[in-house]
Length: 115
Image (cartoon, rainbow, N blue to C red; front, side, top):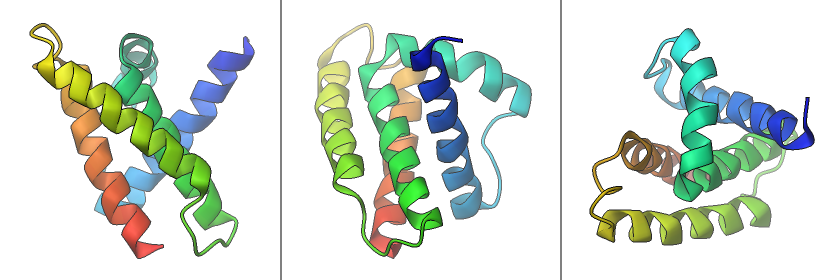
């Protein structure tokens, strides 16, 4: 396995746990999660950044921190900038990656306020 693949798998796991804790459910089946999101991450900087932001927040929370880590906030800022670009791009503004980025940004907002 390549290091970036391993990093993405850890981030995906943590992000998924964040969503599960917040909503007590998941918005797609496990098979779709494993197959679809790594591919979607390769096509969207916004989605990749928000998944990393949620992962950093989850790791901090599990470690007992009461603060949102600076790394998570930096990824969040990157995700917002990339999302803005996607929303102004005619081809990406209605993509699945853009929609999923928006959903996960909402989870991050709620999550970071509760830390």
